[in-house]
Image (tube, rainbow, N blue to C red; front, side, top):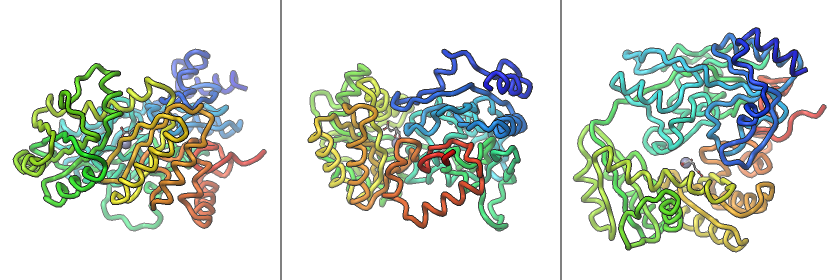
Length: 452
Ligand code: 2HG
Ligand code: ZN
């Protein structure tokens, strides 16, 4: 079957873009964390929406499931194939010129976040979403997971940037909503529905994205704080001051020590080791440096940087957590959020639960969003006891089992903690309307592929 499909797909995309060699395909079968493994019959790399449509028609005719994969930086197993064809989106890399009138641009699903940021900057504008995997993560995956990242408190997640999408349905028909009209009340918002659908409804091929004015000045401060509570309070007071707070990132002494030992970075405050750290970034048309410096002047330890190099040095302590954690084992990544006021209690409870079970906890996150990245190292990849315990604790504290990474395969067993029976039934009906044969990313987001 694979041989016949491979040659049919080679006619569509060219033989160079159908990958069947075992060692090459293997690179597409595991996620970034190494926790989620699967099996792909082959990898196909279409270069246009028409080619995506032809690939989906060929797969539907078999039928064989299809899993879209972009940069493969997702952390919940949402792009790992299980006996499926991997449709790699990386060749859908067209960057159309920025439309100055609407401050929007249309880009292919395979464009990386950093390429699109640079493209926007070239036109004197900025893209509002930023995250640590910027050099690898692609627009299609960021749309499909409704990626959040560092600036959600200021600009919202990916959903808030999407003015429209082009996507291919599993039977090969194309939906195209790329006009970029801010006002268009003609019924169900199909683009909006695809944002966060994790490749289960259609395959996104292009996105029409909104841009924002670039801030003239930007400043970053790293503070030593006494704990989560002080981080939450300081974040709220800087936000209230109205000086353009864009990011508020929290991490702890144990995470910092791990980052320093894995990367060779020197700790920020020499021998002084505060229990927790808060990184604040403000940006706007007026230079926020003096105002921010004044607001943080009473912190026991602080460093403030306004130049690109100094800011990057402060950010490295925060952004290099993910790789440092990955270097000590295969982490269980529990991306949850709770109301920010509850974050101190929840963070303490999560740490207690994990350490009581003899596992290692590394916590960090986006404090203004109440979004904590609970990383658990120690338990086997298949052992999800602590996963369940932490997710249930988040929900008990008024939060959700996924803040910004999505459900993927990692969290399907607990989706009912965050979604009511009526919501789950509606979501299942939507899935059936888009993908009646269950061919797109089966087993992701909604539990289990249809039997048979
Ligand atoms: C981040 O905030 C990402 O850097 C990754 O969401 C989080 O590695 C993680 O747990
Ligand atoms: Zn994050």
